[in-house]
Amino acid sequence: MTGAPRLSVVVLAAGRGVRMRSALPKVLHPAAGRPLVDRPLLAARALLAEAGGGPLVVVVGAGREAVEAHLAAAFPDAVPVVQDPPLGTGDAARVALGATAGAREVVVLAGDVPLLPVSALSRLRAALAAEASNAVALLTAVVPDAGAYGRVIRGADGAVLRIVEAKDATPAERAVRELNSGIYAFDGAFLAGALPHLTSDNAQGEYYLTDVVALAVGAGRRVVAVPVDDPAEVLGVNSRSELADVDSRLRRRAAEAAMAAGATLVRPETITLDETVVLEPDSVVEPFATLSGETRVGSGTRIGQGCVVSDSSLGRNVTVRPYCVIEKARVADGAVVGPFARLREGTDLGEGVHVGNFVETKKARLAKGAKANHLTYLGDATVGERTNVGAGVITCNYDGYAKHRTEIGAGVFVGSDVQLVAPVRVGDGAVIGAGTTVTKDVPADALATSRTPQKTLEDGGRRYRERRAGARAKGD
Ligand code: UD1
Ligand code: MG
Image 1 (cartoon, rainbow, N blue to C red):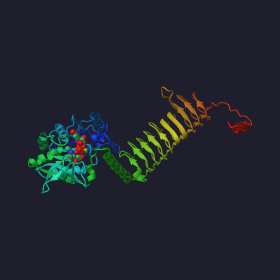
Image 2: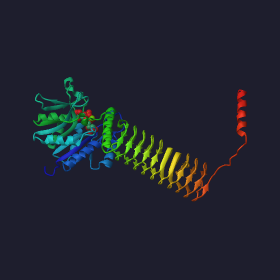
Image 3: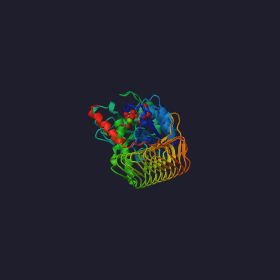
Image 4: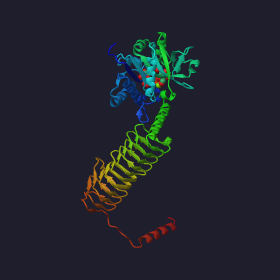
């Protein structure tokens, strides 16, 4: 079979994932910020790169529109094949085989086993290749209780004879502590010959890929079991509880990696990190912070306690005080944010900007050195360099139908409790008095106020109190 690739990797991802009780296909459930299926796919890619290339096949079925869309976006090198309806892992492998281009070796990965290192797969391939009589190598793990996993049944001489699913096992078989990881390396020609012989005569009425093991033994071929170093490497996700377990293991790994790379995590067990987050050396993250998505934190930057930061880029030496929510924002070097600030999508804070407590920003660009320290809403706005935005300032950006922009120049002083009714512009160096409602553009260096005149009644306060005291005495 000249021209056939040496290796093809098949990822099984068509199962319904019934035990998740979810509208989302199981393999798209995220763990540490990435869909489950990404990890076996990344491992498959690395393995194929090691082998000099070959088809990467993904079997899709349940929820396949969503799975295919994800593959197209994140793994355009993968070839999706459709298994509809999903009739079991053996049926999935049969469907995949057509896309493996007659590869001499086929590695099968489960889309729901995300923690597996590539090194384990390299060992698996080496085990298969060790003897010409080997038809299958499978990764196994020895655990105190193999739960719902398939059991590896060995003969008196220790040779692997077959795999029995937990649901089909006798009590004696259930007591076996060696579990099947669902990850295999097959002699391609053997697999192609064996798959048509599978039956669905079992507790689940499915075509089990695991039955290929007994077929190999029956045909006089050998099956090698390769135990993993740590049973956690082959944890499968079939329920929300197993998802939570895998998620926290991955996050712990991400935290360890961040610390190894020079970040300080204060009480790391309380910090939630996606593995996509990058923390530069000498950044500090305080307890109970959550950092997710494409977030980058520069050197010397401190993320305060309880902050929630997603898809944002923070420069160097930024201080984010406790309890800020930052989403799709960019914050330049030396800025100071919070406590209790909310930076929404499209916020862009320049160098040294201060955004203080109870300030909300959205699509707002604050230039170098600008300040908005207290109780303010800046939406669809630009604020020039060194401009000071006083307490309680609001950009009135929405008229009930459309959003409008507010443009404030450099070196402007916006007094407290000012409303800027957009669209409106304030020129460089302008001063806006406290309490002003700005409805018209303010030219550079102008002073704008819109106050009603103050009325003061001499002695009025004392007379008011007397009136109230009299009313109380009468029992009102
Ligand atoms: C499977 C193995 C079991 C092993 C366990 C390890 C079989 C029969 N059993 O059980 O021995 O201990 O994995 O995690 O293989 N899938 C399809 N099409 C289908 C059915 C499943 O693509 O028709 C995919 C699923 O999306 C999943 C993978 O195959 O990614 C495994 O299927 P799942 O139903 O989770 O099998 P387990 O019961 O975990
Ligand atoms: Mg499973």
